[in-house]
Image 1 (cartoon, one colour):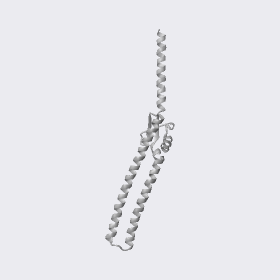
Image 2 (cartoon, rainbow, N blue to C red; image 1 turned 180 degrees about the vertical axis):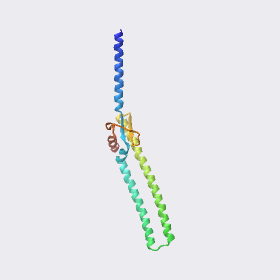
Image 3 (cartoon, helix red, strand yellow; image 1 turned 30 degrees about the horizontal axis):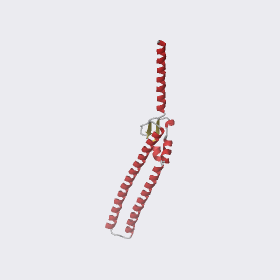
Image 4 (cartoon, rainbow, N blue to C red; image 1 turned 90 degrees about the vertical axis):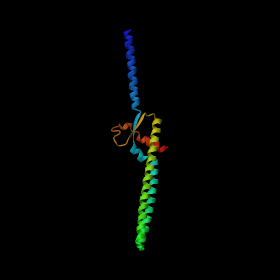
Length: 162
C-alpha cells in the first residue's frame, strides 16, 4: 500500500512538473516585443500622411514667400512706410497662424498614426495568440530582450497589408 502511495505521489509530482514546465515554455512563446520607433518610421500610412503634411508645409511657405515678395515690391516701388509696416505685420501674423496650423496638423497626424499602430498591434497579437506584445521605445521600459522575440518586421508587414 505504501509503495502504491509513493507511486501515485511520484506520478502526481511528475504530472505537476510537466504542467509547470509546459506552462512556462508556452508563456515564453507568447511574450514578444516590437520597436515602436521602427514601426512608426516604416508603416505606409505614416509615409502617406507625412507626404500630405509636407505638401501643406510647401503651400504655406509658398504663400508666405508670395506675401514677402509683395512687401519687397512695395519697397522697390517706394510705397508709404506705414503701408510697408502694415504688410510686414500681416506677414508675421500669417506666419504665426500657419505655424500654429502646421503644429496642429502634425499633432493630429501623429495621433492618427499611433492610434493605427496600437489598434493593429492589438489585432496582430490576438491573431497570433500572444499574451503580451511589449513596446520597446528606448525609454528604459524594456532594458533587454532577445532578438529572437522581436516581431517588429512582422508587425510592420501586417500593418502595411491592411
